[in-house]
Structures are given as structure tokens and as C-alpha cells.
Length: 158
Ligand SMILES: Nc1ncnc2c1ncn2[C@@H]1O[C@H](COP(=O)(O)OP(=O)(O)OP(=O)(O)O)[C@@H](O)[C@H]1O
Ligand SMILES: [Mg+2]
Image (cartoon, rainbow, N blue to C red; front, top):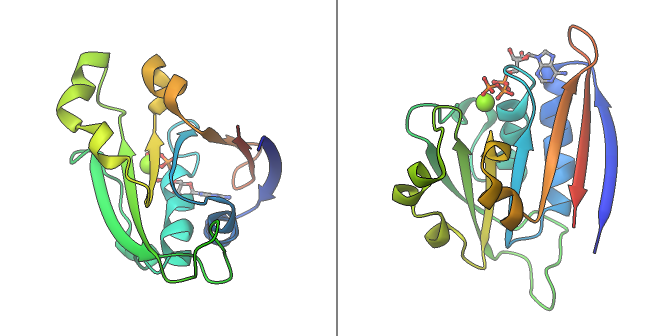
């Protein structure tokens, strides 16, 4: 199901709130690339997604710049129905930041395939640097600065 949605936010609080809304559209399993410049608001958006899943409070979600991967365990977003399944199913939220990696072969030790379970929502900052990830992704969320605090957020699912 291809889908493109565009949103605007004018503060980090609004971006967290948008993340909460978007979580309802991010039915696992999914792997998405979070595309945007340094400081665009990628990690901020993940705070809202994690909160919606009950996986972590916004202040608990920090940038996985050095650890590369953060894992959170949550539950299906309330009100969301996965095909034929009831609410309450576990969701594994993986938040990656690949800014510090440069080559495809540096991805191997991460064991990305193992992260992709039927319950997984894998969100990858700077994933666009790696063609293999772009090819595998179910879509992307693009965040662009359009003013000091204004952001355009585009969700594309394929
Ligand atoms: N509308 C907005 N949405 C999100 N963040 C905003 C907004 N307006 C201002 N900001 C600020 O922009 C910064 C966004 O930081 P964040 O860590 O989320 O960016 P990032 O895209 O993950 O960057 P990096 O590539 O360095 O990981 C924060 O300091 C936040 O307060
Ligand atoms: Mg970040």
C-alpha cells in the first residue's frame, strides 16, 4: 500500500506529538529510513513514536550515535489493528543512527537481518547513505528545516 503524507511542525514538542500520530501508520514489520540533516529532528520524532508504543518516555529516548542501536520494547499502538490480530502484541522498536559509519561492510556486524522480526519497527537515521538499506526499506520519513523551528515531515511508505 503506497502512501505519502506531508506534515508541518513548529517546535520539538509538535514533532514529538507528530511521532505519536505517525506510530499508528507504522504497522510492524517495517524498516524505515529517517532522512534529514543534522539537527533536523529525527531523534525527536522517534521520541514520539516510542511514547505512542509505550516503549519509552520521550526523555528516555536518546541518540544512538555511539552505540548505533537502541532497542525498546513496547506494545501495539492503542486503537491500531494489525491484520487479524488483537491489540497488545509486542512491538520491538529499534532506533539506529549510522552517521558514523561509511561503508556497507560496516553494517555486517550490526546483524540488521536479526532485527527484522515480524514485530519489529526499525528506524534508521542516516540509512540513506547505504544503498542496500534503501533497497530494503519499506519507506522513509524525510524531515526538512523550513525555518528556525519549522519542519516539513514527509512519510512515504511503499
Ligand atoms: N519543529 C522541530 N522539530 C524537531 N526538533 C526541533 C524543532 N524545532 C527545533 N528543534 C530542535 O532541533 C533539534 C533536533 O534534534 P534531533 O536530535 O532530533 O535531530 P536529529 O535529526 O536526530 O539530528 P542528528 O542527525 O544529529 O542525530 C533539537 O535541538 C530540537 O530542540
Ligand atoms: Mg538523531
